[in-house]
Image 1 (cartoon, rainbow, N blue to C red):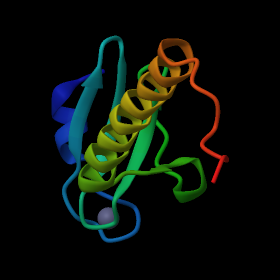
Image 2 (cartoon, rainbow, N blue to C red):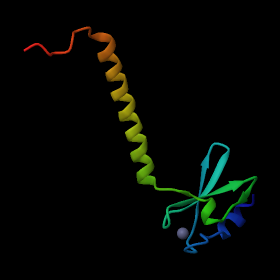
Image 3 (cartoon, rainbow, N blue to C red):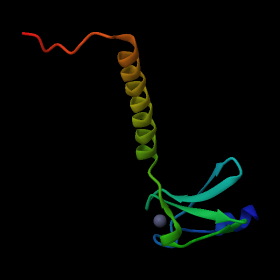
Image 4 (cartoon, rainbow, N blue to C red):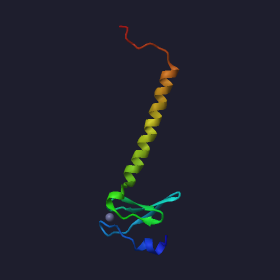
Length: 92
Ligand SMILES: [Zn+2]
């Protein structure tokens, strides 16, 4: 894939500039205005709206945080279940 060609590519929706993101071997072209990430398959950018995935940097950070919180809560629950053999407080 020629970088000059990538620079010529614009978002098919808003004709705005695209940012090339790399995830290891995978690459995609992100339109920040539309919050869409267009895949690059076999070196060929797929500039189709219905092939793009929703891309929201803030939402992705948020999802990451939520996953961490969920993992922390799950490990706390596990510690509760294994660390305490007290019966439920039902006696009045
Ligand atoms: Zn766009």
